[in-house]
Image 1 (cartoon, rainbow, N blue to C red):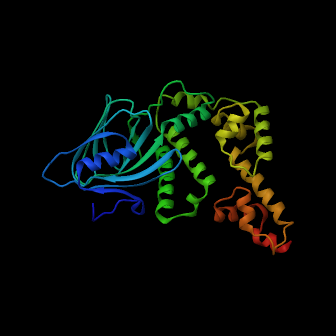
Image 2 (cartoon, rainbow, N blue to C red; image 1 turned 180 degrees about the vertical axis):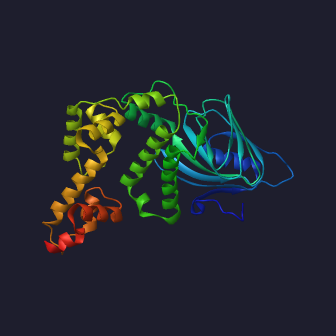
Image 3 (cartoon, one colour; image 1 turned 60 degrees about the vertical axis):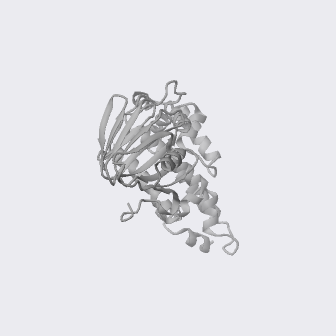
Length: 327
């Protein structure tokens, strides 16, 4: 693995040749498991990099040699293991797959698991806190899940929904590797975590897929109007679709569908337009010598200044700084 560094190298957590140390320290992040090299004569080269947020962790992991791994069933979290190179045979209950860079494995960890990693195999691993993910699921379907969430084992990464989810993972990885400012903004991290959870729940078949589909049932215009009122009143605060839906008593997907039908937009697009209007109004009355575009944009929830400036110009026909100077 030394010739091909793992992603997230700036966030090293483990590098060891000792099997027991690797088992213990990798287990601290990814769960208790058994670990055994297939060929005892080849030295283990265990490397784990990674970082954690509130409900999500992102790691890269390799052992440098062929290994057998037997994770224990867990209540704390779920794992999505995305091969970077090589292949792994994965068994989860009665399901069995060969995981490759085109097929990730989604480990619900509710049943016995066994894995055989080929020599040189390495993975990017997304870890989801089970309680956080199931709470997020409840917001999407409009009720508290009564059964543990379980996913199908294999995720076909060539399918559009899975590719969309993987693009969010790649965004998080790139931000972590380049020290991006996005990860220094709690609001942005919170929204990114929510997007990761939503996309996973929509992309990967689970025992709640039918409930998620039913979550698109029609909502009354009154619920849409309550959501509009909430957005107007709290536009400067961190808001997600799930929080808005919960506040007005409907599922998140149903609210999305209601906004599309009645307003021809989405809750997040509507929120962005409200925030743009508030920024514009504030810039027209600010003293250019006492205020900055950055401060005003951040105050109204815009954390990606490049995208904000582009959206502002499209909406008002000039840059935010031009508005500030003109006034």
